[in-house]
Image (tube, rainbow, N blue to C red):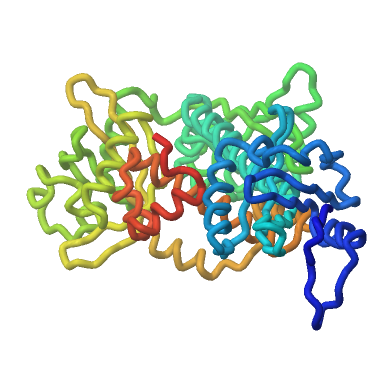
Length: 469
């Protein structure tokens, strides 16, 4: 470091330090240190010897610091350097991105220090690459987590659709407990029970003249027969004889029997039966169901919806906008209709329904676009989440996959850094989602997030989202 005859340190509580020792002290106290003249020329570069990734930067000396900054960092440096020349030190540290011939770049957080050498500035920098790597790890972990959830939901949806559409009765039986793990609607119809009641019961209780151990042993032995032997059993309720064709497989560390039940069913689930069942589901469902036109005008609702909004008659609702009953009014309605129009379906949109007495009830809304050329519209299912919210508040478990991903970062960064970066990632994701749902309507996005418009703009600027279309 060149002193030019100037005194770097004054006498007093801090002893004078010889110039030949000063550079090593500065290098040890920071990752990188620059002395920049008033003309922005780099007079000296000191790199911490333990930070080998910077390499040899001696060729920076004598050149403008602007030659080694990215475009956006040049503006930031100028904004801090001009006040410095006027005698004002920056109140905050400055994060700059260095680059050289576009071959590499890295972020550094600098602090400005005056040391009395012809209005030059001493920049002490900390390498931010470890923080950037932690951010990238958090983003990648979140992406992997979301992809895993989507894959699981996709397979679950395929399985449920397959089970519901297969006309042949099928049940899954655990060989360890003898309980039914799952069953399709055709099997429930065969036994004269609901699927929810059928799942979890002992398989042998559905048959006559067979104990649990005997029935399971017979079914397992039948799977060993290469000819696919069938087991005969008689339904306890109807007395109907049934042929069971079992197949064994292993899942979750235990053996499961998939049993195809070959017997007479009570009826063929044709189109007419489906229509009748759909109408019965609409009338008797415990969840609120509503049908609107593409603009959100109510066409039909069930009793559950009338109970939710406290309406006495169907005529009080039909013809009115659904937005009249939503907490955020047209903002919520616009999000629901726009997303239904773009993506056909929307799951688990959280908002509140305001009833006629002014009470707000938290709900989760699922929407589906109805592809009918004669009567296009939107179908909505509204589920009261008051009880679910209270249960979530009492849940203190920490075994989620997301928590485990964050725990794995312990050791790669300090607790303060992990918490800060995780908060920023989640906050940015929420803001991006709100802006996307409202189609870049900043007023609507701020209301959805419970922020003032000024606070939203501050956060958009913080995450570099202000100019995003």
